[in-house]
Image 1 (tube, one colour):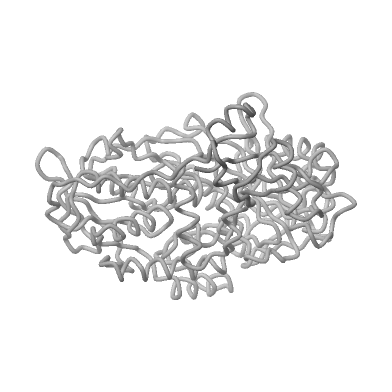
Image 2 (cartoon, rainbow, N blue to C red):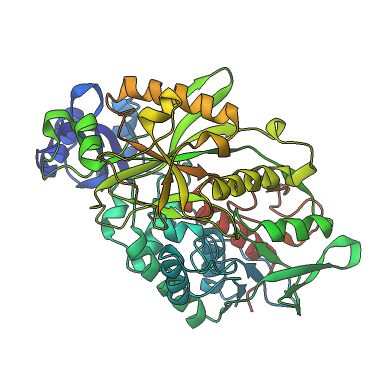
Length: 526
């Protein structure tokens, strides 16, 4: 058993060993082995400190020790779940996994690990060919609608920094981190409160995990889009069609990602129950990373012991929120469209986070009540309308861009200043309002001013906004029951962000593992 001691604070430039000693002395803990379990930077209130969680193993009478201390800062370490329960029913056909984003990848990895030999289908390319298509598009080439920054091995998460921050408190998060490290991710992610791998390293991690799936008996096929599903007796799943080829199956993990719009329409037409869900829309903001460091670290900015500063900001008034999303220190704004004649932004960082700019989405919450009538898929039409308007606003070249000072004053940008946009296909300075609904831009202005009060300089005139950011999360939920299966088609298991049950790499990966466990609890391995 292990004891966790949280909230141990030291000046950021003090050695880690002092944190362990402070934790021991503060709570009178003797013996056992102690190590850093998690660490983070706290730059609030004009101070810069490191905050540690210490793990102590092997103390005699641990239960009595924790009870005696009686502090919310001292607790048991949550134990990892026991090995999954296995069913004894034979599964006539191999389980299918559709999509190789975090949810599909971890579902397939888990099934393969325990002898279920999954068939895995991905509409895009393997990561090497996919990266070639993405880089060609960034350089001004044609979009490949099947293999791009949204579709292909690794899913959208492969091009968004590899951030593993999550709000879920699930012991399977540790399993995800350990798996990533086992396939080449830096071991430091096991200790970071806000772990990230980096887009450059994550590509190799994904490739390695796929190799392990294949070595364990799984079969991963690329350029293999889901085109139809087949219902059998009592409406239960009987098979799928991949690129027109029939594949018999009784269980299929549906991990299609938040941008698989054509697949959502196919599922609706096949009678799968879908419902609209909230998401958020806005634009990418860029500052010089050095300026963000000064905003948060003050006089300590540039100290070699400090990482590139990152922020999380939110402002809510009148029931609608404006907040920062997917903040990328030292990162780049990327072209994230998956359909022709559109403009879409996202953000990413490499592991070193050493780019000149910092970027984040500044987005406003959108509710299904904001959509025009159109049923479960009205949110897709809402997104498409914004993306198409942005493409036209930029004259079909790059994306619309506006300095923050001009945006706040309602005037067009005629020249860019000290912050140069990193959107790879180029930007067209002017106004971003024409491509975004008025309730979005009004709330963004209010939010930016509120953020500037918290981080002086955040609304600096030379910071830039590149629009639009529309793919924050799925606009659709594929409703499932307590058994994790579709409420309208037994045997189909919606999973991850695209199904509306996750938000980010970590929660999607955990969802994929849980869905795999559900299949395993019912059926015996092959």
